[in-house]
Image (cartoon, rainbow, N blue to C red; front, side, top):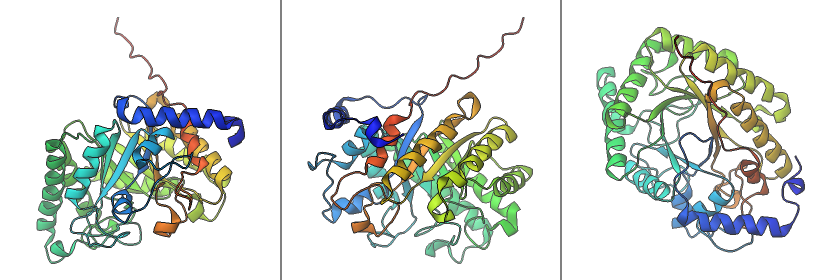
Length: 362
């Protein structure tokens, strides 16, 4: 769908922006039954601290959360590092900082996802370094470390009035976490670590759904291999989280979107009672129409999962303008304004597909 077809006039865009601005302070929290249209905003606090000025589509300075809400965003994702540095891009996101940001988001009506990295900095498929304070700990102590860090952060969130709807135990962990003890080469130990995170979340916040998150959402073999092993080892989880970045696949999204949808459908069917979510997505900020089209296609793929088991889609760091972060896949212009590509969240439905009615026994 061309962007000009979605918003045929400047007046329409202005009215939508004004409505979003007003909604920032008067809208109730999005329903937990609605489709999650999310934004990971881990950089936001530091962008504000360094004086970055966010501007709405009309070029007027505005709080970033208000701008995101005007784009249709109803959920916020925040990463947690254990003992981070003060580096503006690779640090911060301490438990205390995350609690403050989560409280701010929740007070404005956003649903909240928490993403535990179990590291002092980025954890991803290429690196899963233990926090410095845990580096010499034996495996038995690492189990306690994971539980205590998770439980402590979740308890602080609850005390601040925030009940996260979703919680990730680990970030993009196709090779495991807390290497080497928790690598997939030691899958039994990996499952134990993940289960301690799961138990800590449920002890502090019983209604929060626990996500296990891998990269390459288009790679069904990766997901089958990982989750089959996790289940065989007694692994506990509620939701399968996926990342989907056609940019890093070095191909247009049209070459892999069918594989993403097939994987979403297979995971929801293969593991009864589990749900799926695209926890990270992003597109080249210079390719506005292509990113818009990709976001529409990803939302359509997730919504196609039967029985409402496709929970939503989260854009990773849309506000992280390249002029500040160096990140090519943000959705923000160097003028401080959101990319029109984010309007894809407004264009897609928010109501979840109806779940089939339970059959009544005769």
